[in-house]
Length: 272
Image 1 (cartoon, one colour):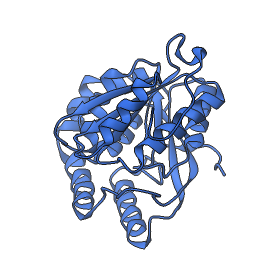
Image 2: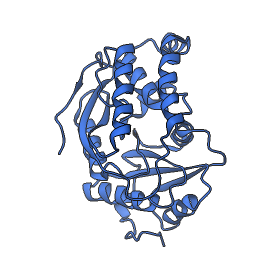
Image 3: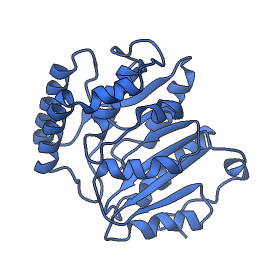
Image 4: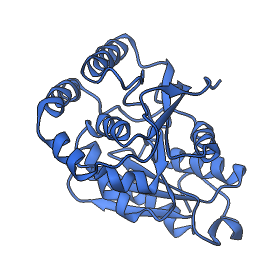
């Protein structure tokens, strides 16, 4: 049985293809991963959506993989992907994307800082749109501490200076949810923490409108954050490198067609 009890899936949850696939990279998250899986499954179950949860054990050296496998063995629609050696946050997500089978793909953290019901809300807002969209969270109410807030404001300020037409206030905000075809055309490549900015930049150039909703981001209840000084350096260096390298230009030549209207504006009401 899973470390955190969860009632067996209903037959309706397993019949037919999933409505959404969520990729969740997990690195040494044994203290929290079971709780996150349980809450996510329960939230989508309550809303009547068929969820496929692709949990990536991103090179963990603790019991993270064992806990994920417990949910698989219990019959839940959880896909266990194992990365033998951690190569970064982005690589964990890139390793999970090929295992996704739903028409919508999303990315969520393993730390449960954003409530699972907010992920459901984002998905439902995306479904209601009549065009391809990127639905994402804006962590408007955060309990990360003063230092993390300063780093976040600085990073988002630099991003806006380099890409002034992308009007997001939380580039790294998760969850992020978008149609499978959008993910395919992005041809994502960042193996580190720069994956989130890459998603935002490429969604803009594809003409995919971004809808951003305010969420409450609580402090971690268990486990340790993997964001450190090296992560901050990676954020800032990645922005400069990507803005002035030929990588983005090469991708734009390969994917010239737009999927929708220009996506610079971010819309949507704040959630409570």
